[in-house]
Amino acid sequence: MKAQRRSILKRLFASVAGVAGLGVTTKASTEQIASESTASKEVFNVVTQDDVPLFSGSTKLGNLVFVAGKGYHKEGDIKVHTDEVLKELEKELIKAGSSMEKVLKVSVFLHDLNDYKGMNEVYKGRFGSKPPVRTTVAVYGGVPGDSLVEMDCIAYI
Image (tube, rainbow, N blue to C red; front, side, top):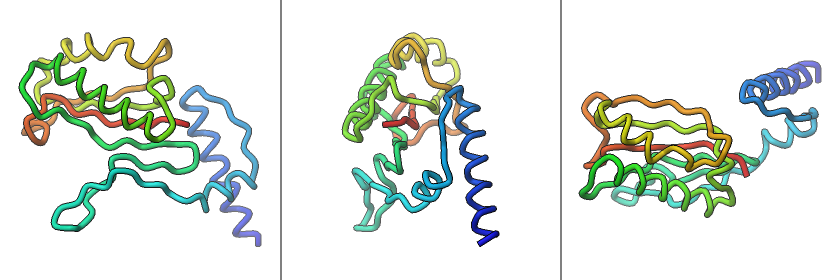
């Protein structure tokens, strides 16, 4: 019993510290933490190869949604690719019951770091007046497929 209580308290403090780091406040109880640890995971748009699951388009756990990396594998410059990728992220978020305004974190993977300015021009304003935190990197060897940019995100519902 004592070890279980200690485990719940550790998760409570980790949860509060993590949320506080994002600038969001929450009131968590040990019951909430315990129920979150047993929450069921919902998976959407599973991609398979030879009937073996590879990854999910998005996954929900509790009030969070994790959207897999989206790319655009057709002709166009970085602005076209960025616009199409952001549209795909938005579609996935809406299917999961969220929106662009509820995105907490975005990871941007560029084929070429020289495309940073063009990507930023299209990206700007797409997440409302309070944009999410973001990591942007250029990927050695390029983004998989023919995409000039790939993005994934984490949002709340």
